[in-house]
Image (cartoon, rainbow, N blue to C red):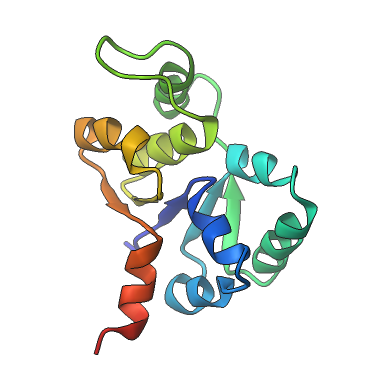
Length: 140
């Protein structure tokens, strides 16, 4: 099975803002998943959305939704509205990425370590952040 990478709202724009999304396209073409919640958040910044749409139209990434009532969606709702004791409410993009990575056995791509760490540890999911991608490109 090919590893899928679920991006949250802060990781993908780190590349979009500096016009370096081609790095992601070269490394992970067709394996980048953008949760619908993240896509919706990016609609607030039209020039970033246009860059995402170009990636999507060229087959480098896909936008995916969660099925209402699924375990993945239940986990998402819990993280965004009523977390377990000791856990904090997190943003929709982070929660969607975590829920999808957990349920679909993928890797979460997020730069928001403070908010996601407890969930990454709890669900034992793989995690990377934007410096990792640059490291892959420039490490001999």
